[in-house]
Image (cartoon, rainbow, N blue to C red; front, side, top):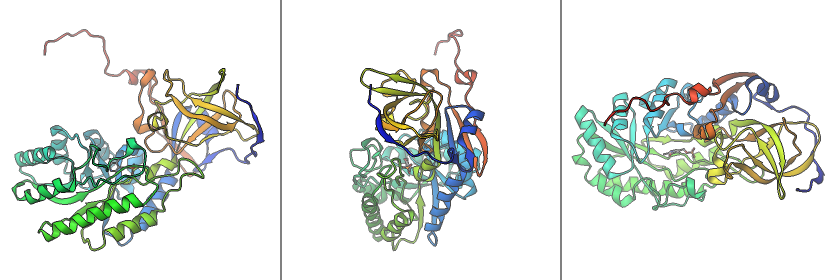
Length: 427
Ligand SMILES: *Cc1c(COP(=O)(O)O)cnc(C)c1O
């Protein structure tokens, strides 16, 4: 058993309040685990970004995959934001949430013919094209429908985003985008594209970036290529700077860049470019607005370690299992307690169902509420029903009020579509 340290943590005066809502009361009302998002916090990020972009011809296209809940998309729609999508499903969500297709850009290496056709039909603003094959497919499908698709080349600038390998996308060994040499050939041959207007550049080199250096390097490369294209007679109407801005997952350790500094880098790198600038922030807009509210099921004293077993699992938040990601974990009990070192785990039958190892926390008891912080991005949107755990509830808070924006999945909903093998057919 791990020794308890003698250091005491000061009692916090208030029960945890988020966006004016008492989280203990909320947990009693909607149950645990649940994802909780502060609408006020998201609106603050939106306003800060809008203010930083002042005077630029810029359109923000929120990266839907960060948090695709319809209520979150509605906040983005209310702000006049568009969306960056990576599937037909995300397009469907945007249209349902009131984000017009004319503000949607479509990224991703694996767009299928059906998805391209549906996106053209809906009237998406722009395709961020990632391969020569996709460009030809886009030309064929647009030709068949006799429409003109607007397309940007996703440049892979071969820049190290200095982030976790699994969320790095801008090195030449990554599957994303094409090198500048290949992009140059596309433009040289673009007169043959009768139904695609190739008039944009796109660059997105990774996620959770805490340094501006890779962003500056990628944008400078993109801007240099844009000037070269202009000299060769290829007018570029939009440059999409992608997303990737990091957030604070670990208080005191992660130091996110200020949004004004980020936009200054964009202004400087793209100085002299007169077209439209697109931005695709995901995580930065929503991550820190969310917490995963969970209850301690029990404390298990192993021979070597003490396990804090929560009712939340990797099925609700997979980032620690997938990326070794750190999330601050805060018990909500507000009386003074000693510190104890725990491995914080979920109930799923996988050793990787671990939120934290050797984490010093105020001592917990069964039934205590715990919040896992900064879970508003890549939390619920990456959830699964592994171990037949129904998807958890999602709740939006707004200045003292709450609204359930995804009800906890019922068992019937979880197995919807499954059936015994009865009606055998031959293909
Ligand atoms: C994932 C992604 C984003 C958003 O990344 P964040 O790190 O969440 O800001 C933006 N653009 C593209 C193309 C993406 O794949």
